[in-house]
Length: 440
Image: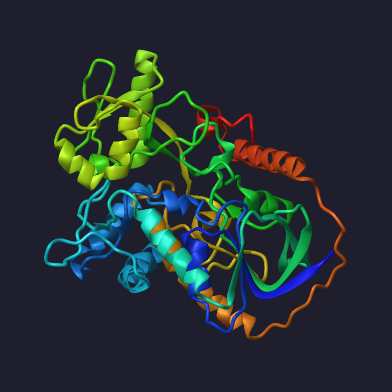
């Protein structure tokens, strides 16, 4: 099998993978791969925004909001690090060229989402993830030490004696190569592509988790899966369009079949999701309704241009009509167990972003903490990797097979491994919410 050698291999081109690469010194040779287009990451789809500690006075409130949303199962140290690091991360993003919304005087504007007690979320229209991720992609493209391969799939880790020496990758033409590295970073996102209804891209199918199960890499809380309460209801197959929590933060309300308001729309996501589920069961429906009567059409088009247009294309004016919405799989709080520096239970292997579980989110993620968490701990992982790379030499201490499983066989194997683990960890949640795609 042909081999390539790099200092660092990063699997995934979402916010965490990109920021890890950008946080590494320019003399370190980096390979990034993604199994689809470079910008087809869930980070790119993030609508609401990114949290930041506006002032020291807001620390206790922000900390408590995060802990409460996570049912106090959060890693307190990780939460503290995330919040305290947020101003530095925002400075990095602005320096890279991210254009957050500002008032006429140039001051940053903030919004609020569910379970937040304060306005502390920076945003760019209703496509914050697109703004951040596309900016980071351009920065990566401009770095001569970083190589990107799109439509390239990780099909296995190269492992010996609980040490990772890189990955086996399948490229566009079907050829397989060994990507040998001193450090390997898993930034492959979550498991949404396995679900029948999800806001995730369909190719995000939990590849890192199935490999972790295969190689006995420690996982944590893989069953902590967040169901987003408000995605645009549709009978069409494919990814569900998310209607951001920031819409409810700006005054949108939820109504049942009797056109009655039935919950506090700004409670944590799992609470709102359960309330919606109860109403659907009560009336025998598969959706409820969302409407934004507090905004004019003009204001909604300015504040939520992407969401407003998407609803309009389905025949609904967000400010006047009842827009049908339903819960869908959205985010994974669990994943590969990682330290606050991204280290996993396997030597020379790191995990960042939604793939990693450092405990910062607890049992339920607070809105708009995902982008921040991805960037904070990606930067910390990059620092740890930099130290490690300087002490290691290239080697691949085992003989590799000439060919691995075909793509369809791998996909089915991955699905069965993950389904079995989810059912084992939480059979009640599994039966209630884990409706897997027949195409997975």
